[in-house]
Amino acid sequence: MSKYDTLKKSAYDANLQLPKLGLVLFTFGNVSAVDRAEGVFAIKPSGVPYEELTPDKMVIVDFEAKVVEGTLRPSSDTKTHAVLYKHWHNIGGIVHTHSTYATAWAQSQRDIPIYGTTHADHLTVDVPCVPPMHDDMIKGDYEHETGFQIINYFKDKGLSQEEVEMALVGNHAPFTWGKTPAKAVYNSAVLEAIAQMAYMTENIKADAFRLKDSLIKKHYERKHGPDSYYGQ
Ligand SMILES: [Zn+2]
Image (tube, rainbow, N blue to C red; front, side, top):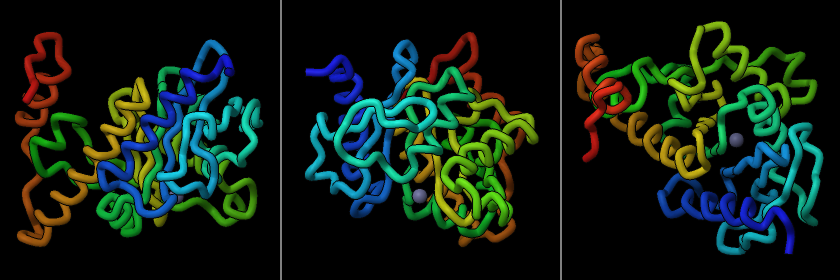
């Protein structure tokens, strides 16, 4: 028994969703779940296949990425998660995958243009692609810097992490987050769908039209506005 059992279970459940949703291959990808009161988060151990995961294998880590409880090594992306939790106080879960379509956009270093209402139901701007980091950052504490790379880019572009719960890291892959680990996983699946649709749209019509502002506003507000009524 551990006082972190509930947190570990919540991270475990969310991690198992990734292979079920077809978002990961082998051990790629990880989900973490935070406990703000305790100042820790639970994250997948490094290199453990999803079918061998159990709740008690989850590693408890603080916001400095120091292991608080657990015998296995935490995911190699732990420092990125720690930085995001430390600086973005209102997020409850983080997901990192190398899902195919979202990663293809990241590798192309392109934002995903807002082409349709599926996209607009979730965010009103292009999915941001954070440019690859400078060499001195890569040589330094790489995973730690990845967190700052995302945070600084959002700051520079005036993006809110509450409005935009996803980002592509250039030449790498996506990170998503949300108020809960389950919402972060949902966002990861939504991002993959949006990425696939946008890819196909450009294949059918290279100069496809972006969604009109009036439609962006309409779709976003019916889901998030004061009079929201969306639910399929
Ligand atoms: Zn990665």
